[in-house]
Every structure is written in structure tokens, then in C-alpha cells.
Length: 149
Image 1 (cartoon, rainbow, N blue to C red):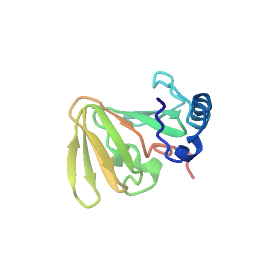
Image 2 (image 1 turned 180 degrees about the vertical axis):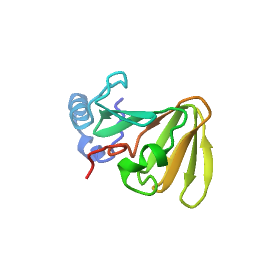
Image 3 (image 1 turned 30 degrees about the vertical axis):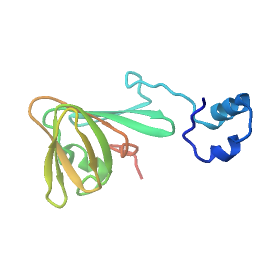
């Protein structure tokens, strides 16, 4: 039994042989990829932090390691040239505690195991003596990039 995730293939696949279906599914679908943060495609450093980037499936995934004392407004603001972080984020929090303050004043802590969705307009900082590590699936393409236009 062949299971497809792509409903647009349903009409195409109707009435074709199993071999043709398998061939079509393999060649029309995405290729499997395997990457590791142990060998990032790019690494950016900034005061009290670093960002490792890997490109997978056309997307840029980032792992940020933020040391105690890191704060966006003091570590990245000068690179971004904005009053608050305008990069939206969709993050999985691996370790440490990251406090987020939205421009509207809403404030909350993100801890290991948490997932956060942050729209543009926020500041954030590490709470405590443990580095905060986050994996970000959105918003890291130009993050802390010194030569962005």
C-alpha cells in the first residue's frame, strides 16, 4: 500500500501500476537529507552567544547558544540596528531559561522542553547561570548577520 501526503498526486496516480506509483512518489517528493549541528553550514558569533546554521530542505535551521549575561538589546541590537528584535521565531528550548519581553510589555520565561512562537518586536535575555540553547525553525536567516543590507 502506498501512502501519499500530496493530494494533487491522487488524480495522477489513479489507474497507474504500482511501479509507476512508486517511481512517481520517489521522484516528485523531497529527497531525504541528514545534517548535524556538529558540522554547521555557517556559524555566527556575537557578544555572549553564537548561532550555528544548517540548511535542510531549503530551510535554514539555527541553534543559538546564549551564555549567562546575554541579552538581545545589548548583544545583538547594534548588529540589527533596530529597537527590538524584528525576527519572528519558532523555537524549541533545549536548555537554560530565556526570558522574553514583547514590545507590548508581555513577559514570560521559556524553559527546557518549551516551544515558543515569537512575532516581531521583542527583547530576550538569559536568566540564571546556565546557557540557554534554542533550536529555531524560523527567523535565523539574517539573525546577528553583520553584513545584512
